[in-house]
Length: 436
Image 1 (cartoon, helix red, strand yellow):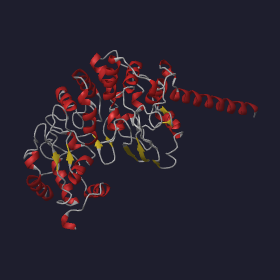
Image 2: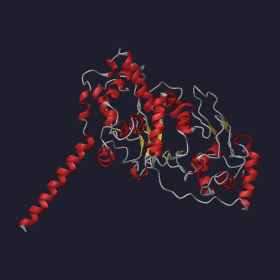
Image 3: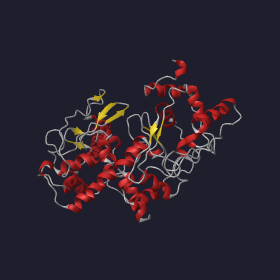
Image 4: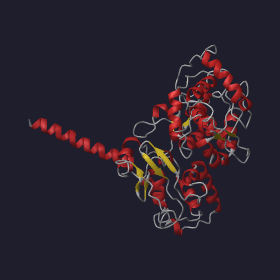
């Protein structure tokens, strides 16, 4: 009996020690010791022009402005809404305002928040992608701090997690989430790969946080590592597969085409809209061509799922014939009789892998409420698509999209009328006139 108790005690002690080490590993912020811990941001006024310029580039790479700025409001003053399965989060005010922003933070506090998810109000939620920013180098962090000192303070008091349901509104719970899912590690390159590949990996997995949108998440909101960048649902948007998979991803595109898309918001096939338009507008259009080339190089090297290509739905089916006529009448003027689109203006359907995604959310959304393309410095004319909510019922929209997804070399599962109906309700889109 004594031996049994001793063995059980030893197991308990080892378990506690293991949990303690695990917690220390995931919650440890010792890397932040390289940062100053004496001067608050509100009292910092960097005069290092080179560092400020580099810091602005880090900010652009990390797309900070898109998530921390509400249109028509002060830049970086927060309040941008994140709709999550657990409730609504608001982005923080990250201006140097002393009372409502991050003005009281020291550089070390800033490092802790950005790279470790530990802010002045407690643990951050992973909607703030510290899970990727953990890979940022010390130099990039120092430069970003210098840039943040130049931002104009703005008063905007926010209760960021007030819209989260219980118990998800308890910040301390994020400590447990971090223990389960947070990889608290610096960037690790691959000496067997080129400098460009490693730079691309650093941007994609670090500041660029591409997987935050383009990877699916589990029931607790963590990225599913085994399906890295194979497409993720964003509520009423869908971020498509951006792996090197030639059927569902971007493996069929040239590096030049990927660079053009990231730089201008469009290429010979696709046009950015929705959250990706925000990313292009606020982030990728500002990146250098070598960095964009590096991103393309790395993305095309990633392995996607080995999904079987389905057979296209037969064009002889009555509903497909009806959809073909409906497409010609309503869609072909812009998207072309052969689905060719208009370069840099209207997305093509032929050769556009995103059209064949398992999740047709973006297509359904565009049909119901329309869409608008991004406007960038190089391509300032962002075309718009009208809504067809008033003109087609759920079955007609589903059939039209099924036709698009199975014509001109495309092959994908049919769109279901019930999915259109659900999205119509989610978006509060009107019923078509025939049913009014």
